[in-house]
Length: 317
Image (cartoon, rainbow, N blue to C red):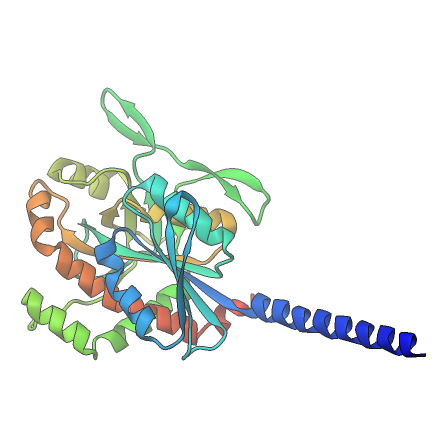
């Protein structure tokens, strides 16, 4: 009888442990995970500082190739985790970081950083572009460059197809608009605007453009004009009556957009010009990059919080 009782108790303990483990796994599966990326340390500094101050559990994970992922289990948004990492500069690096974030199970992914300005905004104005393009993929002819679409995996069709323009997720864009409205009321915004000398003309968020990404730092007025005016604008057609102009050029975002498209992960990016991508760009970036990076860091932290607040927009899929 005692042997039977001990066996029954042991079975009940095992059953209880299995139940607890199942609950823990279920809770882990219900966690909403935000992925965030920045190109270099100056762009990510502000967000990492805020992660450490938020009050939730903060820690780091070392991924492949020594890549460091900063992780926050939000206190103010229970059930939300942020995984934040630097891409390092360049398209291949951004592909690697985006792939690793996807493997970590992120539900959405955003990328922020400085850029060259090809649009109507000014240095420091954040662009939330509608489309992202890998700009240096194609054929170089004697008469010039001919762009080509990328062969890309389409997870919804279950096949490869050719695509050039990767679409930003409209929900993330709406939350960016909400975030910027709140960001404008913060001391961080006001202080950086004062440092930039733009109190009378504060930065405004710009939507609806095309962002170009390549492994070039564009400091060429000629290439600027070719990309912005001739090669990459979207002109009205019968199927798509709306036109889109080129707005920014950077070295990472389209690579992340492609990975997220292939993994069916909602994606959007913000780029803040630190130069006008013309012959004088090297001089301009040396003056303005820190203002653009600091301004973008403050905005990105607000954007991340809005995504956490409205996580249900993505969990209903």
